[in-house]
Image (cartoon, rainbow, N blue to C red; front, side):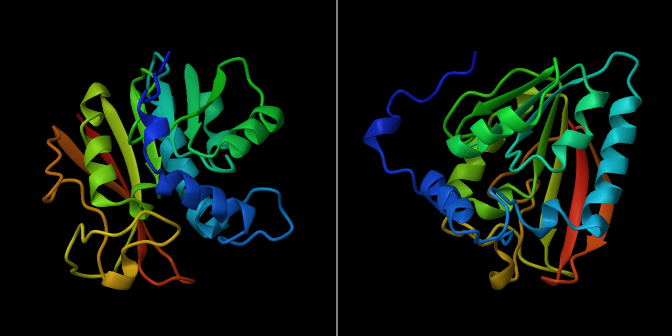
Length: 222
């Protein structure tokens, strides 16, 4: 079972507080919903091609994969992928959100866990899904996450990026916003992260009309 950082109570946790506030105050929309992870998790133009690409990948294995969905949010996307896996572990930092997901979504091979993915150990698995999660985190937190990715064979990463050329990985304070205001976005292969991968496959580039920029999904084989 994954272990939580024993020193957690001694430190401030701005990311946890920020994400709790997002849902408490409906900062990503969904005023009439109990929990809402934003347009990126609900708009058909963004969700449908993503689900099709990831589901096709998962179905391509003779032996289904164990998937760790890190930053699962309201699970509007993840619920479409569970049936294609051997086991699906969905993780988020917001305890009330995880409790809600446990009550709403059920499958024998589905598990929800409340973890801080920068600080806590991750569940074992074959494939990690990080869908529009890193874009909200500071470089320091991303660096701690990157150090754990080598324990998995496949990484499916989705990030909201500026269109055209941009300077990657400008630092931000963790919260509801992203690097787009700085005309930047996360590129794990660039400094300061320098993730080493065996193969990179860009799957999707979908225009994000409401916010500008593009939502890019990439598979990394580790």
